[in-house]
Image (tube, rainbow, N blue to C red; front, side, top):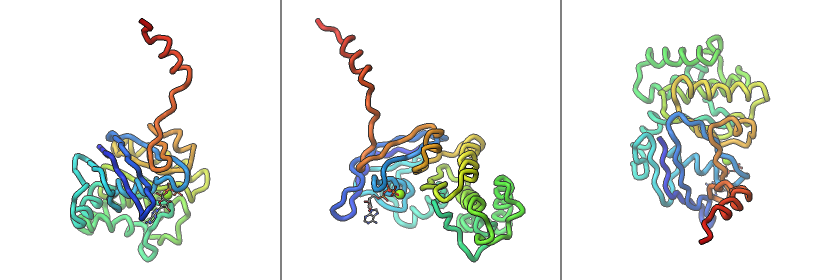
Length: 235
Ligand SMILES: Nc1ncnc2c1ncn2[C@@H]1O[C@H](COP(=O)(O)OP(=O)(O)OP(=O)(O)O)[C@@H](O)[C@H]1O
Ligand SMILES: [Mg+2]
């Protein structure tokens, strides 16, 4: 589903990503953790085609996005990827349902089709009675669920989330995390989630540890090393 080979990225003299190789399967829910400044957001932005790597290649959904033009990248994003950010980034002057409809319009759906799709998603999120509310009339958890609905409207293969529950209280946080797994189980979406939340990381299928621009490989327990020495033929 996602195949990343030898991605590097520098900002001026600062090398933020130093050679990232990563394969993520369809339907996997993967978390990316690591200290502040490790390069998590940079990596997610590159996977999301919002930024370009200096070197390396990325295949998503069997499409090599490495050398696509800006126009093709914008279409690719609209059709294959959904984004959820820490601070929902809904458009304040539009209602919940309109916020969800906008990417569907851009993808070429009619107003009627887009509205129906947005209505279905609002129902799935348990937000049918909030459809006409503007973002400032919604709670934090509701706003974040609207943002997830917006990310899903074009039925993307991959959802990319950067600190999606960072601004939520415990209850809303847990509901949002459960929602990710419900979506994966029902629609088979692939999730890549950058998080500082240990609770979330611990329930994902796999956790990638990023440190100083590299993926940390798990340290082999000493016992295993000793055993392998013992089993090494001595003659
Ligand atoms: N556009 C940019 N220009 C210059 N430096 C940048 C830019 N974007 C990120 N950086 C730097 O790259 C490094 C990695 O940033 P990044 O946002 O990927 O970290 P992060 O792992 O997401 O951290 P956090 O957990 O704090 O969000 C940081 O030192 C940051 O200051
Ligand atoms: Mg970040």
